Amino acid sequence: MLILPGQSVTNMFYDVFNPDPNQFGCGDNYQNSGFLTKKEEDQHITKEVIKSVRRTGQLNLSSRHIATVPEKLFSIYDAEDESTVDWDFGKPKKEEDSWWNIKPLSHLDLSSNVLTDIPGKIGMFQDLLVLNLHCNNLTELPKEIGSLQKLTKLTLNSNKLTHLPDDFFKLVELRQLTLGGNCLESISKDISDLVMLEKLDLSNNSILNLPPGMGFLIRLTELNVAHNKLTELPPDIVNLRSLLKLDINHNSIQYLPVMGELRKLQILHAQHNDIAEIPSFLGCEKLQEIYFGNNFIKDIPLEFCENMYDLKVLELRDNQIELIPPEITTMVHLTRLDLTNNDIKE
Image 1 (cartoon, helix red, strand yellow):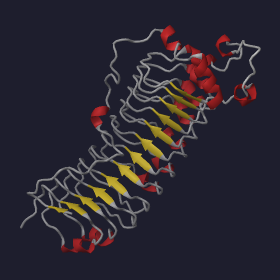
Image 2 (image 1 turned 45 degrees about the horizontal axis):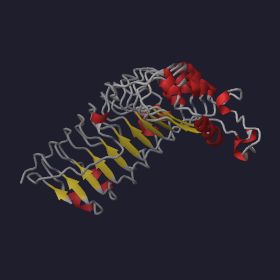
Image 3 (image 1 turned 90 degrees about the horizontal axis):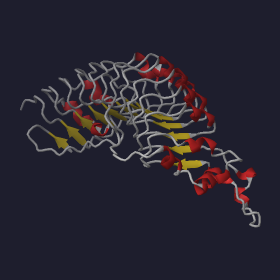
Image 4 (image 1 turned 90 degrees about the vertical axis):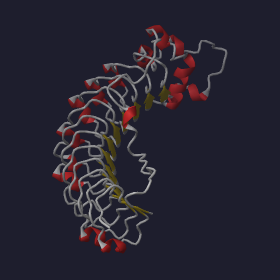
């Protein structure tokens, strides 16, 4: 599909990797006039819930209108807790409820509530693998979160976080970290310690620059830093040789480094920046989709046309391109070329 100036175009560039920025921000994430009392919050952890947690190792308290983490959560494995004891001695105890079948808490979901803080006692759950805290009103995290060193997935998007505690970067087993839609202005260089990361979402914050050392995250397959205040990418970004998706749209980036070392890169979103030149992608043989709309690009390099043989989508709308090079016809796998709103001369 070729889209040239003058055509009416329906925007088809829906990007599931980059959510609607309007859903994020530093305002209240959940509007609710009836906050629960502490006693009401504890009532969410019933005897049956406790049995289920002990049996499965999973607890879902999402969308419960709770403003504080129920205190009962932290005694859920206490044997002397009356609510967990079966006083019917004449009733045979189920095998699955026996003490030797108790599973430690591995999955905890507290998302979509109105939590403003997480107690330091969260650090007692050292077998946690997955912790979901998205869509709350958290402004900070306790340093004890660094004790959860088995965590592989941590979801913190749509909160009000302004910084991360130093101990946060002890979570060296993290594979997926979602911090989109917070109030972060910077990221510590210690993020380079999270070497197991595969997916990192820092979108919809106010980050001014990415720290040196990002290139040590060599297992990253997806990096989303869209909707920030970046003016450049760190030079070692090209060391992310496992990267499949890179989203840097809606920043103030003026130029991109030579991208050829990103040999596995498949999708690049770089719309709404201040980019004036298309960088060299020589070596990026897996690239299938490139989005450069709403920048200041003036021409399409000959080298780019010759090397992007397998490219399927090229979006260059709203730039300053005057000439379409004839070599673009060598891109035989191209199914969508969008040149809407450029300065192309007849």
